[in-house]
Image (cartoon, rainbow, N blue to C red; front, top):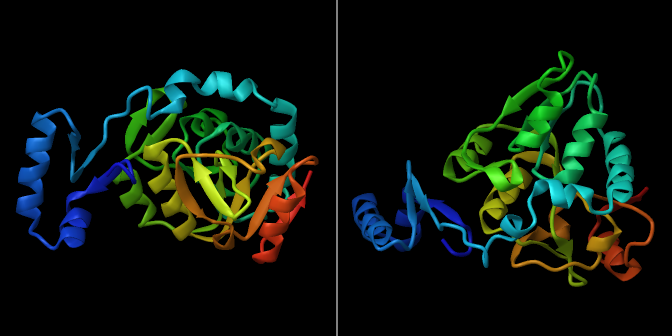
Length: 243
């Protein structure tokens, strides 16, 4: 659970080779001890300031960082979307900007981002699907087992992901524990996974591995990204687009 941030009773039962009833009893004890929080169908690790960078830097503060770079990445990413496509939009400030670029387009957008919802809620051209889950108010996102279950029920042509950074060994990382399982599920639920990351994230750091660049189809960044890290992407068959 410390690796994934959230998990289900069924997943724990399969992993540990015990009954669901045993898992429920253990989760209840851990909940009573304050080590986890029980949610419907599973449990989550409660975030604290040391585990959740977004509590220190909420969405509005992150949105102000490198805004021109993020806008250029979002504009280029929008050119990958064809009319009629079904797209998944991850949480994050760059995906919010991408949502603005998709306004008025005949596309279906599925998202775990309340910020994307705010951008598209009044657009009659876009078919908008909000995936349910536990609300993380600091970062305007939905996470947890309900979100992951919802992603297992859908399929998209493209998934646009955010991340904290890409290491020079090709690992895509993120800092927020509860977001990582959702990002992994988005990769699985799409034909093509596209990473949106401005130049400051090449190379980058993070606590947990989301995926390897080989699991991506496209990386969209802007001029100034570390060439050695981008070369790792290209060497793994990933198309690199630079705004």
